[in-house]
Amino acid sequence: MTSEFIIRLAGEAVYTTLKASAPMMVLALVVGLIISVFQATTQIQEQTLAFVPKIVVVLLALLIFGPWILTTLVDFTYNLLNNLYKYVG
Image (cartoon, rainbow, N blue to C red; front, side, top):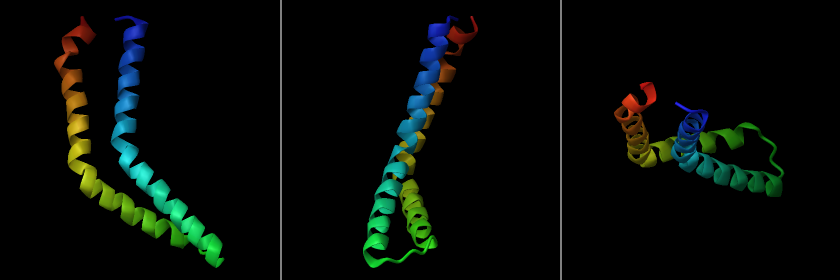
């Protein structure tokens, strides 16, 4: 097991994590931006106004993208465990 192999495996793990969390992060970013523009135009400076819509959107995104996220994580785990003999030997 070489250092390049370990770096490649760690890179795949990070990429899978980013790919699985991207829908929720992007939607939270968009909703946060919309709420910030709304707060700036109406001059409402309530801090909790930004958190509640983001939490709701992230939960909805988790419900919508949940099967895809689960498939992505299961595929990565299956490939990792299926090639376990390469990592040990």
